[in-house]
Image (spheres, helix red, strand yellow):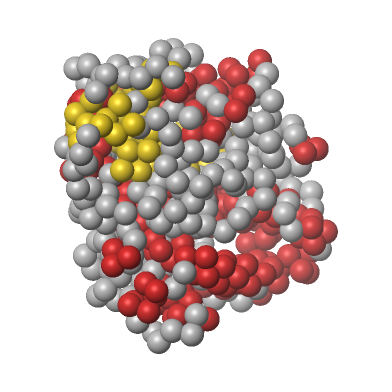
Length: 503
């Protein structure tokens, strides 16, 4: 392996590797290991190391439950997981745009080493610096005890952003042109960071892929309930953080995963992040964005056409659901809205007009409620303050697994990263002429946006900004085209629901 020259950082000297014409640095610690007395505490900035750090291997991922089929299933796990990775064309003075990736996984799973997140192709194609990070997951990252523990994983992200801001100049990047982007939980994290005062100095642009802000969520009561449930199952007195620090990580992960699976079966969501806590996340992020907390941040946001098939196809009994059971399923799924049967039936009827069976309605309605409509709400809130707000809809339907997944959740990731050849499992298709072209067009739009705040380029139709008046949305699929207010009937049906926050 050919090594780079020594690069100096605020925390010490390091060397990376030269890979396919890029300078690559892996496993750089950006904070002190959150272990021992630092477990369940805000991240502490990394103390300088002695000597030269060999930054040539990915660090361990955050502790998490086992997931069959995961691309990082056998990657080492450790609470000492707060590391980041850098791909850059050169460690020079060019001040390239920086693309800072936050992985998804419901704040319970995932990690930067996934082959889908290989920054090589984006960096090469766009002459940009690409950063990927690990952050704390599950209870270790998102436990909520009022006035004591909250939003630790988000503070990890802020600490990584600060390290990047302080040091990226030495890696050929521009600290004043940082685009944060992420998918699913990573996208929710991006939206949340836009509302966090601590993150504000480090963000110039943001890209949100298939994850936004639950208009009913983020309340302290939900975080308190999740934490009380975990403490009870572990036999620990509520709020006894010292006792929690003594629990083995294996026992902690096993117990919280069991709770999570039980709630999934009941269609009850008891999760952790993010939680409004007065200081780090001072109010519901959607309200904060609506008030202009991120008015200087350009935004690109969107979803996939068939997000929910990623989840429903894993539950065989849902594939044979009938209309009566669909009504009960939707009523339970939307229990936080306290809808009666008549309201649920009216909502379902809005989705029947272009769908053939209850399973298709279930997927479309769940996609909109969980992903598309929350993303529209964020776009509406941001567009009031920043004209550089753009909306996309990913419509390419994967042909694998019988083609039943459509444009499912997470399918767009290898298109954005150019890693189709590295993700040939599960729902991800083999590279061919059609999807290669879509990938190139998406990469160029993401790169253009990171460079200038405008995703347009010569190979796509003109892409106007998004507003409540026009709702212009670019569709990325076998046909790349612009539509005004796609799926308008469904959007209007969602707008009739009694969400807590109207912005």
